[in-house]
Length: 526
Ligand code: HEM
Image (cartoon, rainbow, N blue to C red; front, side):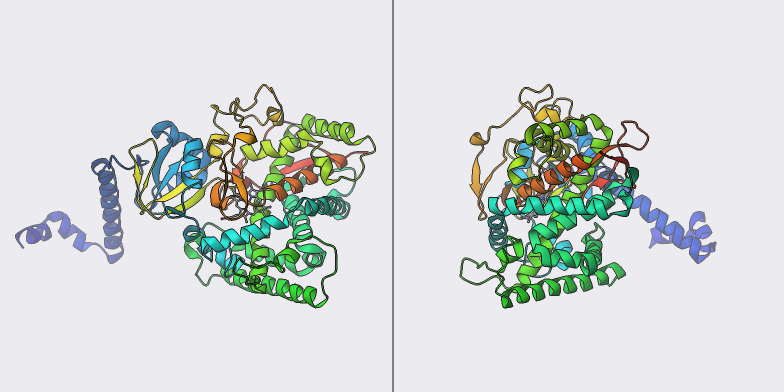
């Protein structure tokens, strides 16, 4: 009582009471912020738990390091790794997030046991409204493993043989029809073009010609609306009745219905066509217990596959074109490689031809090393996890974050790591990776969707590792290699100013991609 009346009687308190309500609220808020900052800083200094990884210093509670991380995740990882080593924690939107990098960090998180780590708890809020119910992260992990098996089995060599001519003809007809490629030369914003080429080639190969035709009318706009649901803000606002979420929900229902109607039509017609698309395979698959995959799950898996591949492949395709514009001599080498391996008349590309074009393959591989579209892979921690070789135990209140891009750009494994050098993948190259793992030595494991290499010792994992590893790797490689081979036949590309600069990376969306506009100059080959 005595203290309170002393405070109330203090000249400062008396002055405060004379202020208007607005000023009083502003001052109270400022005091609250200062106190929170002081308490937050004090708690970082006083409460250091030696059994938990070091915490990246931050002034503001909740916001923590969200802004510095979000602006440039790879720079954030590099800087803090230099300070703390391979394992450290930072605050991301109020959540303690532990990063573990380097080959052992990748292994610790990506090959984590099912009882310890969980992906669906993190991703479901974002993916389920976009993909639909009962697939991928809206079902138990064992069911996802079966779904991945269906998808993987469909991607046979025979299917790939049929996809290469489909992708080639889509690319050729795109460049014939697109208004921005009229004439002998011009300038284009390449990410817009690569996004269209990616969705046309993937939908035609994976979903069949009937679905592809619908992309010229209804489907392209609907996928655009679905895409709007795939933004980082929706980790928090996925439920909110906001205009983009309403559009997302309408688009999800409409796209799923289009697929389900197509499935019904194909069943009714006896589906005698020879196409080896994913829809045909999934609508004829059954779970281990004998239950046929229901039509709504087929539809939702098709949405998931197209969305999973779209951002990653389209961003990679754009980076390839930007790198070729920065290094026109490599594009000429690619052209010469085709002439030499396939003949000066450049016959129509076949699946088997891709293996005869090692530089063409290396261009994709090297671009994924420097521009992997998925910079952060997250897992919820289900049980306290001891980090091998350290005294740290990660509690269940933390999220784990894997960033395989860190080891892919580590000078320990890749000499001159920041140099885009597709030739480094050739034997005995100057910049050849210092650890080259022979595939025979790699440990293989089956999580329920076929044997995959564990990747435990590999510093290069653009397609992830473990039970959530990408099943689209081979498709993405075939798609990108075919697109590049076709572009090289038609065009030469260069930077608009003729120099060798490269545009920066946009990390604001979920997948990293070139900042836009990202323009390049093209010139038709005669
Ligand atoms: C998973 C990368 C293309 C389908 C993943 C993961 C990565 C990745 C890093 C692991 C995610 C995690 O562990 O949380 C890429 C890259 C691509 C690409 C770099 C292209 C350059 C594709 C394509 C498809 C696809 C074309 C479909 C045809 C999937 C699926 C998963 C996956 C179904 C499994 C998700 C899970 O099990 O949780 N991808 N991907 N991806 N990707 Fe890809």
